[in-house]
Image 1 (cartoon, rainbow, N blue to C red):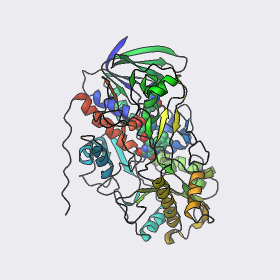
Image 2 (image 1 turned 120 degrees about the vertical axis):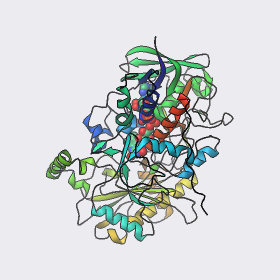
Image 3 (image 1 turned 135 degrees about the horizontal axis):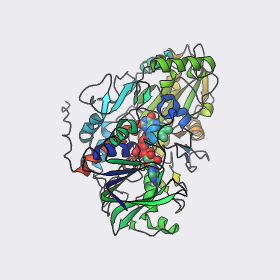
Image 4 (image 1 turned 90 degrees about the vertical axis):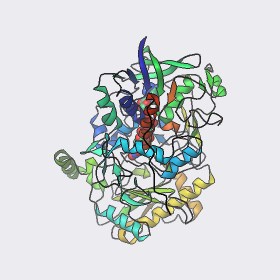
Amino acid sequence: METFDYVIIGAGSAGSVLANRLGEDPANRICVLEAGGKDWHPYIHLPAGFIKTFHMKSVNWAYQQEPGPWTGGRSIYAPRGKTLGGSSSINGHIYNRGQRQDFDTWAQLGNRGWGYPDVLPYFKRLERRVGEGDETYRGREGRLTVTTMDWNDPLCEAFMEGAVSLGIPRNPDYNGAIQEGVSYCQRTIENGLRMSAAKAFLHPARKRGNVDVRTHAHVTNIIFEGKRAVGVRYLKGGKGGTPVEVRANKEVILSGGAYNSPQVLQLSGVGSPELLQLHGIEVRHALPGVGEGLQDHYAPRSVARVKNIQTINELRRGLSLWVEALKWATTRRGLLSLSPTMVYCFWHSGETTESSDLQLTFTPASYKEGVQGQLEDEPGMTVASWQQRPESRGYVRIRSADPFVPPIIQTNYLVEDIDRRVVVAGMKLARRLLASAPLAPYYAYEDFPGPKVQSDDEFLAAATERGTTTFHPGCTCRMGPADARWAVVDDQLRVHGLQGLRVVDASIMPRMISANLNASTLMIADKASDMIRGKTAPEAVRFPVSA
Ligand SMILES: Cc1cc2nc3c(=O)[nH]c(=O)nc-3n(C[C@H](O)[C@H](O)[C@H](O)COP(=O)(O)OP(=O)(O)OC[C@H]3O[C@@H](n4cnc5c(N)ncnc54)[C@H](O)[C@@H]3O)c2cc1C
């Protein structure tokens, strides 16, 4: 059996950072196992290509969630990256860290060293911020390039003015001191190309010679000796492929993402004994929290028809598209360099809400049936709105002992009353924003939810009819103290009760944060790399005590 120091399962956002950092030590030999293929497809690198990779099975796990009690009987589509870079290779490129209180809450749950002053140095260390940013918060020397949206669009400007007219201030940097306000979005895009975690971290790591990245290596289970993880079994070539085992001298690190990490643990006999026995899997280690606690952001998308101006809907057709293609080829700017969202707005659902609990995004485009992925033919604009820190929790559980059968994904969107109230508040704010005076020259009429929807119950019904995931699943292998029944890993990300095994990815978040999850997943992996290497963490940031 081949032996490495570390075996990393999954070359996604977290796996890429880990490979890079652990590989900095030339003595370390690292094997990275990725179920997907290489990230060669041009649609991965062209920012607007996300519309294509969204459904492309060659780079996407393309999961379906189970219908939930508040999704109107619908099974919601759940894309996940399956290639080098993982979901960072098919995501919407938005760079959003979240709020100070998100991480302080993680620390308050019993996780030492995870408060905002502790994690901020890692956010800074990872990024190369181009453009505006206070040096207290922003990094300039990391590998991950973060730029600001550079598309001049009168509709975006009018939307921002509309927000200001409603009392929502412009915020030059929502990743700085304060998140609240309206801003152009920041993206992981450099020179008109996607900056995936593979591009920023994994590919440079491979050049060092001590990181062996294996694609089409579908991990079926972790190998244990007693309570110690000693290696990994995978099928070379995927389903029906050749079984291969690799050994880890030091550690196995599971970075399969919020859906697949709990699945791999359960397939390896780590999880709820009832669930494992149901599928005939021998219980290696009883850990009832595995897969439980799934959280995600649920977003209805409000749409208005547009007049007197072109939207992206028309630009992506016929001659206009050729003009845009030429623009991208010569300047690396224009339509093909765009993210799915252009403006971000963070606000609160009630006057007494402590910090912004609503996230709204604006796009001068609209999608068929209010779903992302396929643009409509007639001009439209969209505001997606979601609750930043939902309380509802679901689960990920294996459906079968067959590693190629997708797990059961039940997100339980909106089961908590507060979530329903905040989502309704978000839709009402979206309506006011779209109908604001500065947008009036372009606003034809509200298409969804439509003028018939007036009461809270009607808004809620519309939300259940059309809401979708914002692609931010997390919290399925939560970090917490050993005596917490829900906890899967400790604050060093070691699996409770086992040796030689850590989980490092979005699944370890104990609670949903006020953000899209890529930035914080990269931060988690960077912090984990110091723990694994036994390096001292950077000094916590000291903030001036406010009066
Ligand atoms: C369509 C979409 C849009 C998004 N938009 C944004 C956005 O704009 N901004 C943002 O911040 N976040 C966004 N996200 C979310 C963000 O990209 C993810 O939260 C983040 O990438 C998660 O990182 P991860 O390391 O936890 O998992 P992933 O990056 O998904 O990595 C997991 C890796 O493990 C591999 N793997 C899984 N199981 C196995 C197995 N059994 N064997 C071998 N390999 C395996 C997978 O193929 C994958 O490469 C989006 C996500 C999607 C899908």
